[in-house]
Image 1 (tube, rainbow, N blue to C red):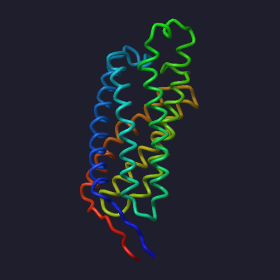
Image 2 (image 1 turned 90 degrees about the horizontal axis):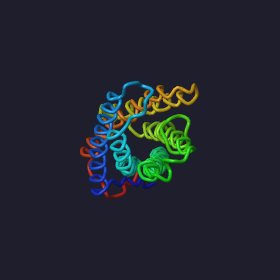
Image 3 (image 1 turned 90 degrees about the vertical axis):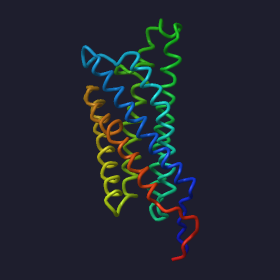
Image 4 (image 1 turned 180 degrees about the vertical axis):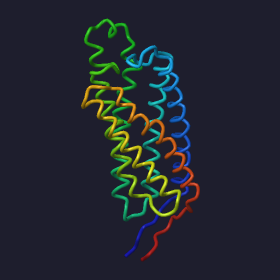
Length: 225
C-alpha cells in the first residue's frame, strides 16, 4: 500500500513564513492589548483609541496568516493523521472568516456618523457585553480557535519540539474554552483566561511550528509500504 508523504519546498517556505508572521503579529497584538489595558482607569472600561484601532487592524492581518499556518500543518501531517489536521484547518478557517468580518465592520462601518447616532448600534457593533459582534468574536476565538488547537495537537508527537508544540496547543485550546465561562456567568473579565491562550501562548506555538518546518526535510515522492 502506498503511503503518500509530500511536504514540498513551497509548503515548507509557506509554513516558516506564516509561523514567523503569526508570532510577530501575535506578539505585537499582545503588547498592544497590554498597553491598552494598562491605560484604562477601570477594568470595566473598553480599550480606547489608538489602541483599539490598532488591535482591530492587527486581528484582520493576523487571522488569514493563522489559516495559512494551519494549511502548512495539514501539508506536513502524515497521511494517517490528516483527518485531525484537516479538522483543525476547517475550524481555523471558521475563526478567520468570522473574526475578520466582525472586526472589519467595526473598524469601518461603526465609525460612520449615520450609525453612531442610532441607539441600537451598541447592541450590534460594540465590544461591550451583550452585543452581537462580541458574541460572534467569542464564538470565533473561544470556541473555534480552541477546537482548532485541540484537533491539531494529536498530529504532533515524537521529539521534544513536537511534544512542546502538542502540549502548548492543548493548553492554549483549553484556556480558550475556559474563557467561555465569561458568557456563562456574565462576567467578561473571565474572557482574559482565553486571551492568555490565543494571545500569549499561540504566538509561541507558531514560532515553534516555524522551527519544526525549518528542520523538516522536503519530501516530494510517495513511499511504498
